[in-house]
Image (cartoon, rainbow, N blue to C red; front, side, top):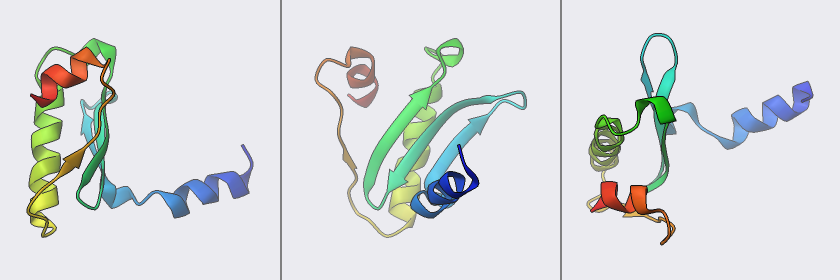
Length: 88
């Protein structure tokens, strides 16, 4: 990765749109919001099935509301059973 490639990442992604769960040792999960959309939500395998995904989702929805949106959007692959279970 060149220095210019790293700069492109900073321009494209705004840090204020990423919410992370930091255990102190590592980032256990993150969620990315883009306007009224939850565009990415991920939790490391070691930290799954402990309620962290739900907490990140709730925090993202609160942040979307705080930013003035009345509704939020979310897209998930139909075959992603684990994600579908979280979002229901």
